View 1 (cartoon, rainbow, N blue to C red):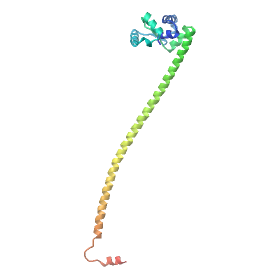
View 2 (cartoon, helix red, strand yellow):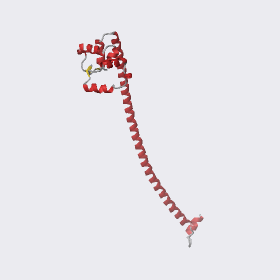
View 3 (tube, rainbow, N blue to C red):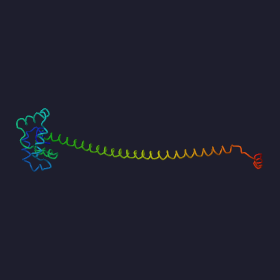
View 4 (spheres, rainbow, N blue to C red):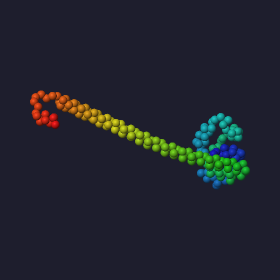
Length: 191
């Protein structure tokens, strides 16, 4: 969070907040607080070129009166927590408690989002695996269908040939033979 936003929350001037921090610099190592570089400051200024109605009245009046001439200080969660030891007003302590609760809620939301993202990635992998599995099954089924169709065609061809041979034999057997009959056939037929 930037110094001017924290000053607005703690209901103090940005100048006074920065004075208190500078008097206690040993409490604010680089992982607690840092000053924006000139490039970061210019990029940040170009980002806030929006309507004043979006900014709080105190921030608007400070910006209009003073303008932003210096690069602001940015505080990490630890730096915001340390501010409570530097700013001892009841408002500052209460606001610090609220900010810490907001950080906890934000961390919980990020944790839940991370877990949700992990679950979505896991489900995506499972869907991809199932998709590949279904593709393999369909490919195999098509191979089986083609092989089965070939086998059915061969069976039908074989049955047609067998039927033709049987028909031909039946025709040969049903014809009366011309000539004499041998008695063996006649006696066998009588018995």
